[in-house]
View 1: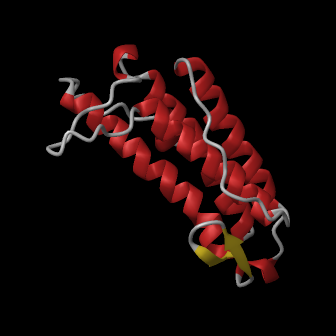
View 2 (view 1 turned 30 degrees about the vertical axis):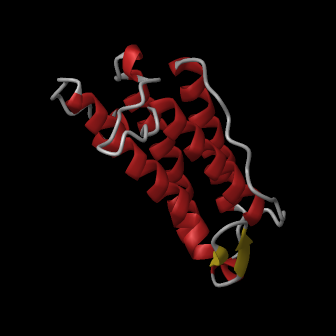
Length: 157
């Protein structure tokens, strides 16, 4: 198995995992913006998912040779469209990763706000982003009193 195939598989699985966390979240919590001490609202679950989906598609565009500008962030109306889009965007990224040449792992790609990033960072970056936000979604569940860790089936295989 190549590094690209390995990473692509894990990106797809993290998309499925994130979809699982969305599905296990009380629908009332999906759009809730919890306030911080400074009264600046935090992002809702659906806003975090939208950011992850945009990052997936943006990284895929870079790996495919595109030079996209700042990505547009989608708005979701509920869990179904958020779950569908996170899985679809993870699949788009996984397809781009599978096609990435070994030489591109050290190649620099120009990110719209972070400057040059290597292909290795792009392959790992979106996965890390989805994993990070999956944990935040689970923490929001805990704050609401749901102390069960909703283990995605993809984590048990």
